[in-house]
Amino acid sequence: MQYGKTPQGGPEGAGLRELTEWWRAVDGRSRSWLILGKGPSFEQRGRYDLRPYTTLAINHVVREMPVFATSAVNYEVVGDCGDAIYRNSRYLLMPRYPHSLPGAGDHLLETYFETYPVLERLCREGRLVWYNLSSDRAAPGSPVIENGPFSVCILFNLLAAMGARRLRTLGIDGGRDYAPSFADLAGGDGGRFKYDYQFQDMMATVKRCGLDYAPLAPLTPLQRLRMLAATPAHRKSVRRWLRTAPWSLGPSLRHE
Image (tube, rainbow, N blue to C red; front, side):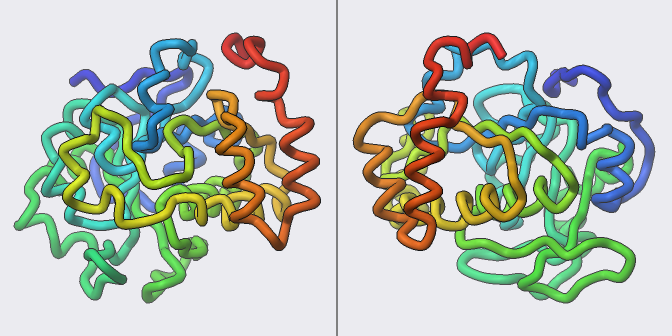
């Protein structure tokens, strides 16, 4: 396998894994997390040293590079990217009740093992991790992660709930465009959403939980304006963040 390598890789073991057990096993709190999305800045990944980060891919990003973990809220992603997930991702994170476009799902994760055999393979190898999502029924004994309008919002909520402190993003840009690597998705979800609105939930979580957050690639002036326009409830704190976030220091961020 060629899944992403990071320091202190967690132990492997058979069976479906609950989120908090997995988090302890991989020492998630001590890691600096890099969330990778499909936005245009994803194409800049070669400019940065990603080795200090634990990489967490959203959906189809796993097609393009090895990562530590992949997040797939919708089970259709497994149909699109199952081989790439098995090959490139050490772990797969999914809700206990995976969603189906365009909304919440009604079936347990194990229900999809027959349709998507890669899920059962990942489960047997201890690489399939489940969590409760607030839009669905909750399994006892595990925290409930607040749902969000976009995958990155859910991941911010998940990482904050588990005690992560340092988050970076790449390919989370607002607007409607995908990076050229994902041009084949333009007829699917690409272009349907205005991704500026993800900033409202993201920055609310940053403020509420005191997260150390910054984009890995500095925001362009247009992206700054989009973020301000999309976060009216937090405009004062977002203005302050835009002035003081680590990315404002410029090239030094590339060597964190």
